[in-house]
Image (cartoon, helix red, strand yellow):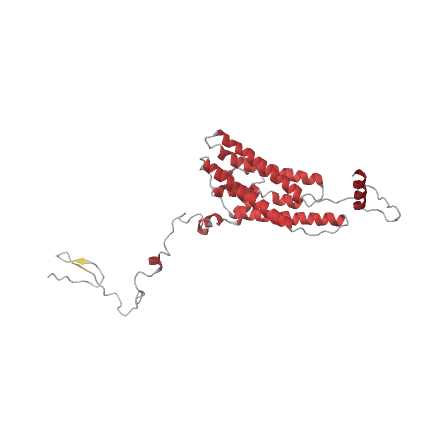
Length: 292
């Protein structure tokens, strides 16, 4: 057996027969062991809590799958919103770089719902007050705005994405489609607030401007995706997008921006045997009886 002297400087030395010795003179045997009393294999690392989860491992039906798309700061969302109002910054490469999000589109559509209801209610109350009439809030408009805005801002892009996937276009994700449609409706928020002003020409002009800006934004971002399809007829889907967008603008104008101050039509005509002047409803009844 070989014996090797060991110094107290904790050096590793090798004996003549390949044996290794290590000095433990510096260790305090009375010091408590932090791992004492802990059973092996039950720590956080053993359970897998501290391990990095692979990105995209969750299915699209799970909430964890959509968490990265809500990880965006307020400055980026505001920049993407007002960039839709500038035609030169409407391209996808400049707006949604480096990645799309769902946080901004969700709040854009939700804010639009409430601004449509509040602005239309305020415009109707102003028109009723100036017309010396009574006004009752129509909460049915709120449910209409919820259905209309969410159906167009969420349902249309998802349906278009499904159609493109069926046609073999896989370069466009559903998140990108929803993000483009959501940010594209931002222009309707300030327009709905300005349409409180009861001037018909001004309201039509504002609706036309909103239709042009949002429509241009959609065409610039959707048409390049349609050109990737092998079938040339796929590009005609842009016509469907334009028609749906025009229908949305006209619906907004008719349902939410059509409250004006009502003036009396025609002179007051006293009824026979009565000194009180006839109101507009009585005049309408007389005219209907004359032509019935």
